[in-house]
Length: 406
Image (cartoon, helix red, strand yellow):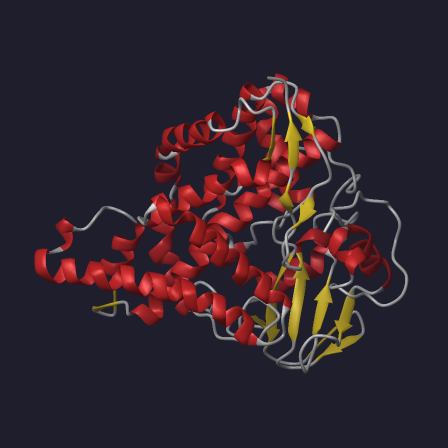
């Protein structure tokens, strides 16, 4: 599916998040929602459909009020108990504390040299070719290698991780939970085996015989005086694996795509200090996750629309990030925005207690990528039209043809 350019036009008729024109360029449809229908009910998914909120203030409210808007039934449009970080407090608090220690500022900074070397190794593999698909050659493998290193699983399995992650995310397009469940079963099966083998080592030789990685930290952690079970750990590992590679791949590819397409690449290449601004503006303008879902715990009326108890509500990060009530010149990609304001107000990593724990790591990978590609690929340019990722909840290229001078 070709990613189309923003036309600046609105949409007419009923909002359909699965319509080809919306999938190819959601911004005009989001603009029409904000202007004309800030709370929209889409009836074409499952038995109940789902509601969509699109204004910055409303999206912020939905993700900020965990008592009214629950994560207990999943953060996608399907009603499913995902557990782990995709749950309500106090369960969510337990798992967030468990995983946050792996993504501290100190631990993330310590990875910079390794990530830089790994990224450079990937570029070495294609720099002499003069053209490549940036996603296949770089933006896909780098985040997979990074999350594999953090988790402590073989990088040789990266192709399987990516395939399973893609299948899981594409399953969000289907109202039947079995579609996504089939992909989840593959990931769960793999990590059940890994955890089982490590438990055997732990029982025989103790914790010092295990590698110092996140899986060991999860395996040896305790809650209420007991270790976590596989049923408790697998949802967390699933989120780390999928979130750790899918979203960062899109962040890297989106940033490169926009900078090249808008003629800003050379400015960022010549002024490396703009890399942070480029990453944050890319997150605002092209959030890798278009939005997540919550479930209402009681009836609520918003903008005159009655949302019943138990309704799925889609909070559109992408629309909120371009709301003119929150941003000046929101539909223009700019490198002169206040960096602190960008980080504070865009919603692309969530907010509050549900802020993505891997946000600093994703930013680091993107900064390293922009700098390295600028240094190693002179005269970088687009070499064809990109194609879109399959999941309607995600935004980013699945392919990004590029060329450069050799």
